[in-house]
Image (tube, rainbow, N blue to C red; front, side, top):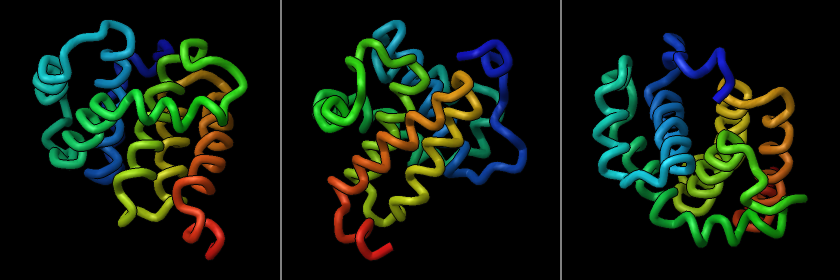
Length: 153
């Protein structure tokens, strides 16, 4: 995470679901860097300042779902990127896992919302243009995973 976001608390104006995504991103970042057990990461994140304002169920679904489905999600992402998964920044990687997980498993969330939320995560925590990359990849993934919804827009 960049220097301004290492100590960033979730924004006061964010919805409980967005806060859940922010905490899930932080947990996935930790998992990607240290390969820690998801239960250990979960317990640590739940003690973070501001977690009480997050959607706990959505946080759990995102963190554990993205980790448990990481192989399948990476297989969906890999053909859509211009580098290997290993070459992605951890923030882009985590934002893409969250977006891919939500596109695949949460059809009740409109695909544009999923993409916009992942882009916001990349803007808040990532490098300069990472959000543009996340946007482009998830646009392609949405067309693949939710073709009827994308065509209807």
